[in-house]
Length: 512
Image 1 (cartoon, rainbow, N blue to C red):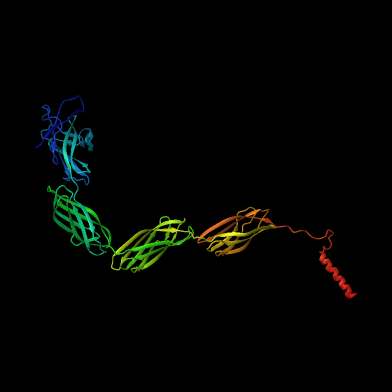
Image 2 (cartoon, helix red, strand yellow):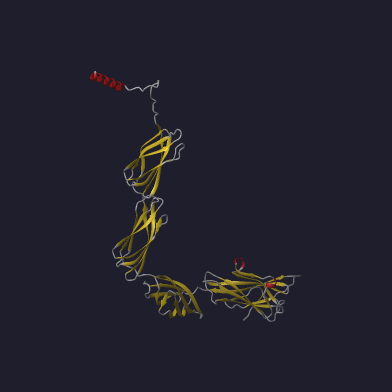
């Protein structure tokens, strides 16, 4: 039965105001029908009639996503003039609390025209997050004969829960071995579903029989379907699950979903232990990270691959491989590492392996390590420093003493930047722990020099260090001038005179 409702608004478009009312009818397909506005007046009867029907695609929309809400306008054959659609608004609720869900306006020649006896479809995308029945109003502004007319149609749309839920799981297995893959179908709909069929397909998983059927699943119940699948490799693989069923209302539905199934190894008895330590080294120097693996499993493992990373430290060649490790055995992998500052350093370690019977395993752990400097590293200090300037030449004598407990190498002593002093350096070489090496460094000077900077560089633990000290310079005493004033022979010392006199007397007595 078709019911008609009058236009609820009359607005003149051009010229004088005319008093005309036009009846509209709303026949609603999906939900109940409600009439809007007052009853048609005798003055308006038989002028124009527009019928509205609404539908949804799919027929039973769900909360899983958008659905299409279609408004279909049909002009009655007895209407004498064309009707244009100027504007459509779809609202939820009534009055000031109504929410505009969709709207569409047309202008000029773009307005769809509805001749007598014709139909016009307009589609809108709607979406609801919660299931239930909602009252919608469709407010339409029409144009005809130079005037605008507005009418409101009301309808109910019911939004359902989405399709039954699917959950997949796989029993532990090894790559290339068949295992059980279970899919749970949970019916969260209000009514039971029947004629249920579930089919699986996966590019990386081979199923023996890819489909299962069941007579039905009650509302609020769960049905488990068991498949036999063989994965190409362990890990997570996507499979495509297609569920077909008939609702309690007789509607046949099909839903396809992509599910991720994780194929994992069986649980092993015992575990693979990890421990790490870092050899002490000077900050910034290369040192060694010792990573020890302990096979606590009840079987041997092979195809070892060890990877390490450390945020804040540098790891050279962070990947190592090994052939095998017997049950109860240990193996240490060494990695070159360095860190600019001493302190605690977390190290992320991943170990993958395969047992002798083909089970793949992986262990990931964050280990705590500490980068420590040596307790008493080698250190050069200058002792016994003596700097003397003599006649334009500066000589510096000193001892390079290693006061640390480790040897140092590449010890070089240099004269720093100083005015009136020519640059020079002296290569001392290596100095063992608690040992020393003496040296003399000479250079030329011009003018008076009171002090000179002395720089010492050396390498300890692979790290270069340096120190600078200021050395005072002493002036050598000038030689005293000799000889007599008259230019004769030089004066002899008194002892020499006595010797000469005594010699002469002795010669006189012998030859006299």
